[in-house]
Image 1: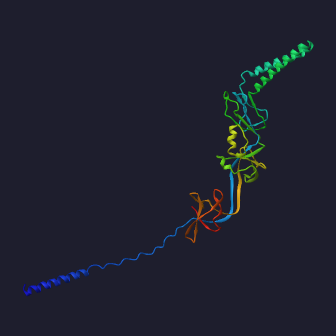
Image 2: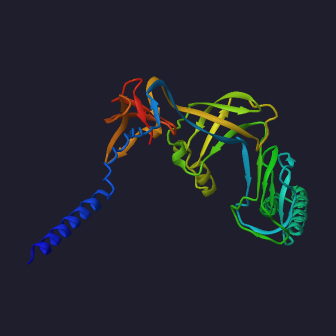
Image 3: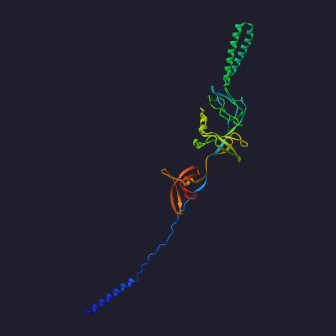
Length: 340
């Protein structure tokens, strides 16, 4: 290669190298990574309540209704029959002996009249027998006795076709009956109640609602803004034995409360508010029911300490109400309990 050609090759190489170095200087400089801003963690908020001292009151409350202590249930006992007439309706006032229900007698009244005539004739024959001798008088006496027995039995049979009021009072129930309906024995057709002797009946769907009630417990009965002191006189557990299925059902779900005085304008069926305190603890530690937790037989609470630390503490539960729980051991007044 000639010297001039070598010189040209060197110059071309130098030019190429300069161009490459110049191209590298045109690339943008790599930027340094930015430091992320510091974010303060969000502090979780808890629904807390402080352990306090107070009273825990367990009570039975509800709406009761005034009913009569003395009630008469009109039933046919010997046998039933077909209805001829019903003489009363609910709300009627009746006197003892008033007719309530009449059955069809099927000619029994005429037979009784005929027997009455036979009895009168026997009486007349007996009076005349005094002059006929001892034997005739004895026969006439026996005949009169026979006619009297027949009359008494027919009279009893006729009376059994009629229901009458056994007490003075107010009709509070009449079965829906019409002429010709057939009724059986021991079917309650009319109920009469004495409105001057009232008590409160407090009923529940389940007898367990009254399991803590006891005879003699104080009750407060409120009506029209006036409170009356009363006491429990019958509970489901103290109810008397009865073969009447309706009464059995009623007694199993009812508290009966005796009033010291009747509320103003009290009448059968009036509603009143009833409150019975069954248990009460004063000056004791209490928390809301929502603060107590249970898991696998364990009873505990979660308390908040130092503003952000949660600790679980086993506790001993005392008296419980629908809203509050008494704490016997495990907590101190002022601690902060986390609600569920």
